[in-house]
Image 1 (tube, rainbow, N blue to C red):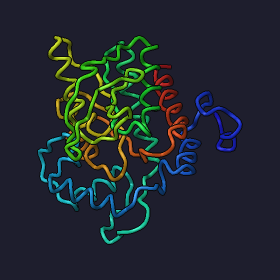
Image 2: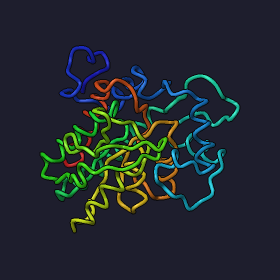
Image 3: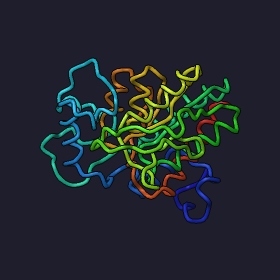
Length: 279
């Protein structure tokens, strides 16, 4: 296993990563531990979800009544943020042990679909950060014999976020993203995944065995009753509430907006765990 001392001398995607080594790496690079996400923003998002703000719901519809205090208590359990509502300022916190644990849970779901060479959808509303993770998962599962679907490519729609036209639904490494004005869009909107699912229905294709996503891509898939695993920051409570209600299968807590190459060890660990489960 690679120790933390080897980070600079061994390529992160070719090294083996123990849970402890990854934990140290996540903290060192603020993917977990003390993260850049402002505590005040997290608390504001918890209140907005409790108030039913569509931008914070990610397309999910909850059966229970969630107050802001309920959401904070849940996020303390699922993410590791402080449960003290009087803590208003400074950076927020993600428990790196929870990140590692949920990565292992995600790997188990990926292994299940890989074993039967199943079908998947992948999508990211945070392409500046997480596209590199999704792309590696897509390539790995396709090499294992899985089919990664690309429905509704080129379709257009409207973002919930600010009522902007979202432009085109495009795919990189068969990972769905939103493109507008020759760039990739950061979005919480469920519309892109809803378009993907409509595309499957319109062409008579079956629904996927698994969805790997984040933001509204994951929320809309969970709302449609699909088995969904996803990544979420501590200021994005929707997927964690969805997991608590059984709508999302696995939510991995992390800072979703660090430099993309910094996710390479996390990705390597996820794919390593997927393979180790089959041995």
